[in-house]
Image 1 (tube, rainbow, N blue to C red):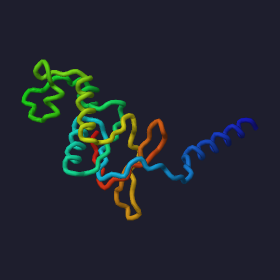
Image 2 (tube, rainbow, N blue to C red):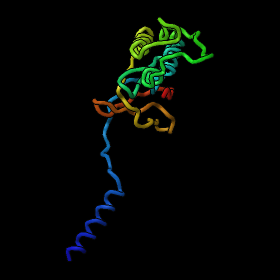
Image 3 (cartoon, one colour):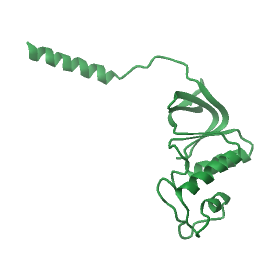
Length: 162
């Protein structure tokens, strides 16, 4: 008898778990409504955001790490590589002092300053969790999650800068 109840309980649990969790419908807060949202905190993502802002777009950058420059500072790629193009102004500012070397702090500071100087709002420590689509099925932004919960960034263009 006990074995039969145990088996029945196990089957019910498997059915419930297989069905997943159904989330109730709710309205998510709108954080930004911009022309371009850049998802990622790499040096390339910051460069893309700065270029879009320079071209006149209203830009917002959202990065998953609590800092910018994960591709350089996060991986400790602190030396310029042989034959690497260093004509970029941001690259020159990151790799100052000893030729072709930098520090994680200098990378992070340079990227922060680039966004601040371009007047681009940004949010670190936030993950893009799903794309946002309009009624016609066109990509229209991203849903992000951070310590404040889930929020929406509406945008005409979404760039993946991971």
